[in-house]
Amino acid sequence: MKKVVIFGATGSIGSSTINIIKTYPEKFKILAISCKSQIKALKKLAEEFKVPYLAVEKEKDAVNLKKSLKYKAEIYYGDEGLKILATLKEADIFVIGISGIKALIPTYYSLQSGKRVAIANKESLIVAGEFLKKIAREYNTELIPVDSEHSSLFQLLQKEKRKNIKKLILTASGGPFYKTPLKKFSEITPEEAVSHPNWKMGAKISVDSATLMNKGFEVLEAKVLFDFPLEKIEVLIHPQSLVHGLIELIDGSFLMHLSYPDMKIAISYALNYPERIELPVKNINLAEIGNLIFEKPDFEKFPCLKLAYEVGNLGGLYPLILEAADEVIVEAFLNKKISFDKIPYFIEKTLKEFKIPSMNFEALDIFKILEIHKEICNFTQDLIRGQTK
Image (cartoon, rainbow, N blue to C red; front, side, top):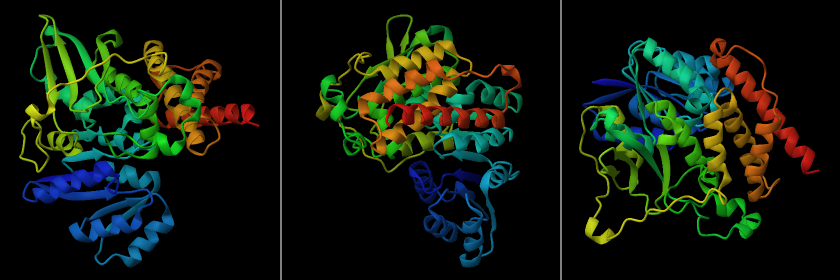
């Protein structure tokens, strides 16, 4: 029986992971769970599974949880709490389901376990991908992607020799505004932007999907995860969200991964790799689908995707600047401080104007990365304030 640590247990990745564990209690045991603020939901999960280790963000929540919990458990809080859960010796699998840069802490320490890390967090790989891959190699840790697109490429890459692969192809739904005229972008509201046509996601990632920045982030992730140059990583718009990834081979043939859009498939593969287990997910009727649609993305209409490619080629701290700036700018849009069409404008402005500190990149660690991330966020906030007064 594999013991699982779930960071972000009350979020969508965490919930799907727990559903799989419920289905196969003979295969998995929940060793530890964490959450940011959904304390009631965490308490309910903890009591249902008698989870021995818990972590929350705030000390007061940890104190209250300790008083109200119906059984005895070890309860931690803050960054130190995440570190403790990520260094539990008896764990077999760590699931990184936290969104945002905060996931860098449990990712970093989990990768030193020599066990398996199933990662669904984009930010960690974008801002510190090469550093984290180095840690994984040093400790011989399995790093398995949980994003549906990267999971599909990971699975496809098991089937072919690297020398036979010409191109990796990520698919994008196109988001809710793919057919919307560019001249209408200034009128798009936050409520419209968070309404994704195919996936139910959080506000931030929904906006990133609407600008195609999310797909740009995934391109940068694929570069790190699979060690392919950017010129060999392509994006295709696929509105049906059934094909999650493709690889083009040197003989002109393609392999594709097709499944119903359900995160449990990618999570289950990461938990059970290299084996597969039966899952209660919706089956696809290919005859009913009829045609699969693929289109090229419009870089003029969605400049965020273009910016991601440019940042990937620049390397260094530029991916960190891109991620931090986007975090602040999307929040400003959601709070109706800027219009939708200004998102790429402020991202590009931050990339051009933030002064990169002179340093030895080899000497970077996660704490310095987090410090610079905060500086970039503050810089971007000042940019927005200066132009929206």
